Image (cartoon, rainbow, N blue to C red; front, side):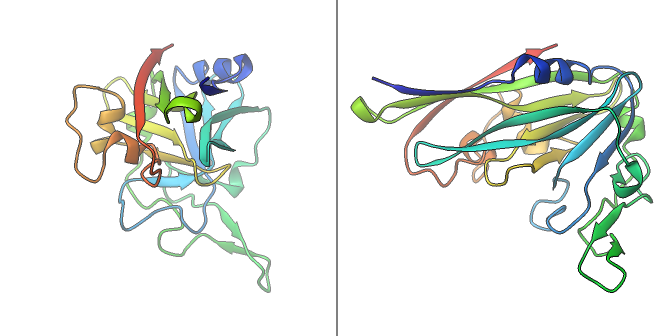
Length: 226
């Protein structure tokens, strides 16, 4: 008998995801160590906050659970009726880098260290609106016989402005609360288009964070457009 795990978004979080379709006033992040990686430029890891033109802010992070000898995850979306944006950095106004709290004499230090904050061009033209949102769902099977297992999980959101490239918000299986954001999908295109050739070292299994699993995993991806 196959053991199964269901990590699809509950209805309130699905509504929060759908609410991101439209114009964005800002896209914020929590600055700090590990935000940017020199080994994977253009990919950022943090907890993110989308400020829609209409409706409450939405926090985007990951929910991680242990299962089948590894870590599974799904995207987590939480409506924030109030948010103190002065503590957060902005992808729309890169000069706003937020605040990193540290055990120092003044207890608070500006996010000035390299890699702790966003230093690229403003993403406002890309996501000012209207933004189209699609949900990425993975269906995975592994094991054989009595050791067979499967799971389904809502892993990410593809986000695309009217005239800009497609970006990706993706849950991370190695750190709860932390998601990944790529303004331009690049080789992550394989998660959005099954006809895209896989890149050696960046297969779908590896892009989803399962490269360390020794078991063979059969992975199917679905795109659900709101």
